[in-house]
Length: 112
Image (cartoon, rainbow, N blue to C red; front, side, top):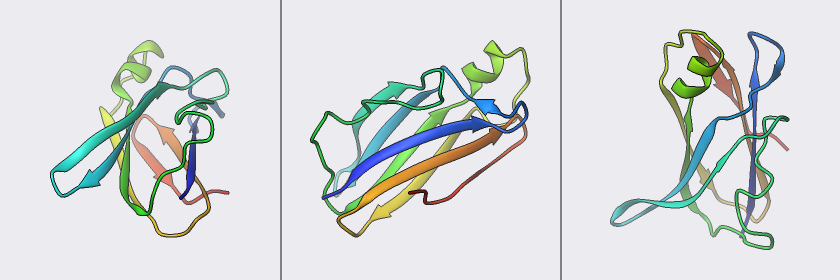
């Protein structure tokens, strides 16, 4: 069972990205099921994406970051209307899924 967190930084301005809606989905034999949703705060984080004490079983998950409305609010034209990061939870550990974002690119890694 694992805990999961995320953090979004806008590398074009060197600051956290506030106001991005993020969907957490889990893969099952029937397809993808939404498990949680939240909006990033002023620090680019969602403090309660999962309920306190809730952990995810091993499996395949994805986070969908709705970036179009964020860039519109910043008066910027972004190339990617959303970013989907798919990942596997295979250990009983904390997983941090950060997104480094700019209007024309993004990167991610397994954080701590």
